[in-house]
Length: 465
Image 1 (cartoon, rainbow, N blue to C red):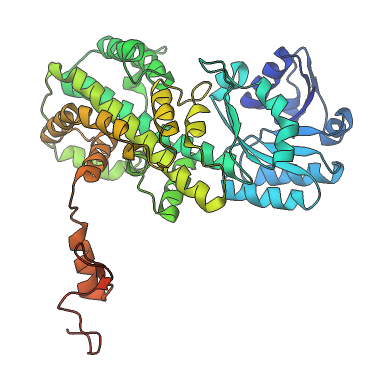
Image 2 (cartoon, helix red, strand yellow; image 1 turned 30 degrees about the vertical axis):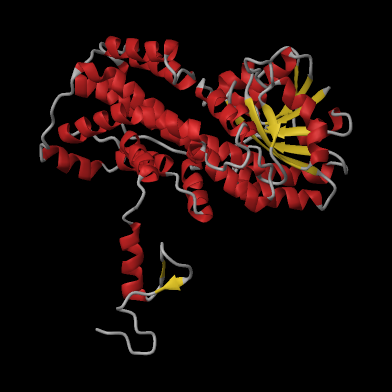
């Protein structure tokens, strides 16, 4: 099989090597001459897209591994006039799913297939096996599936972590949700590390050992805990002490977290773990306000060393809830867009290769597979019971952290989400009454059908001052 590749950055080069090692003939190019200077046995580097198109047998399948946004359109505009009906272009970047739908429609009118392919796993996944989330037509998927399967990771049951989720932007939507969940879990882990170091007073090596133990035998075991153990114990290669002490805490982001929040608002789905994680990154850049508040010298206390297991419980609960929120968002969007509604497939495509790979995915996938009508995993009794069993320890961590001045945007905000789901009568009844009082918006009642107003609303009279 011949593979066409446009884009020889870190991801593109590693995918090329992966394809080469699985016996594929790889033809690649890049808009930048410096990138085209790269060489590897078994990978043919060509000067431009014209040479690439000429080298590939039909139907041609060409993957774009370029920066999301304008560059994708530029590459498509250069390629499309040279392609034939039946050829397929794949976009492997972190593109907005709406851009993917636009591109698919435009190319489809010319008889050219287009697939949006979300790829997770970073350079390591690209080289040794990634998770691939695909959206686009069944016909285009049929032509591209062999080449994508060749670079996919294998889960414990030997299933390849590559799947198609529907037409248009389905694959990039799944990747967007994956990244949103990733934001939440990364922030939750960072908060847990803060509590171990600043709250309990562990050394860097002691904290690294805790994360290694959680990853070795804990329920949250997975790639993110694995790399956290490595990072927590890393020493500064340019000096002395822990490397983390020298790393700026102003966090960056590339947009997928914000896109996930926008999708949650659009579809009316509560995803507070993801929202709080994005907010935490934004807040990290508020340098002036942070400096002033630091000078205010807020009181800060110590946490008990006996809370280490409780912190792990809080982290596991947050992981389960964040995964559930992301799956819920996909379920609602899939119904609106006509995408595949099998939520277990979403969770299972992340089980190997992806940044989110963790043991909890199998548990949640099995739970939603046994409850096909559920659109939010937490509405499944077994998942709800699992979370409930963690709440006592989780609440103790959040309470002690609030009392002693440690901000838990995600660990605390996710607990509030779980607690809100468990409250039989939420305070939003008051919000509904307030909306009716100042805007005559009406409200539902618990004891009868229909829309109602309070005694303050007089529809046939002028509004009272």
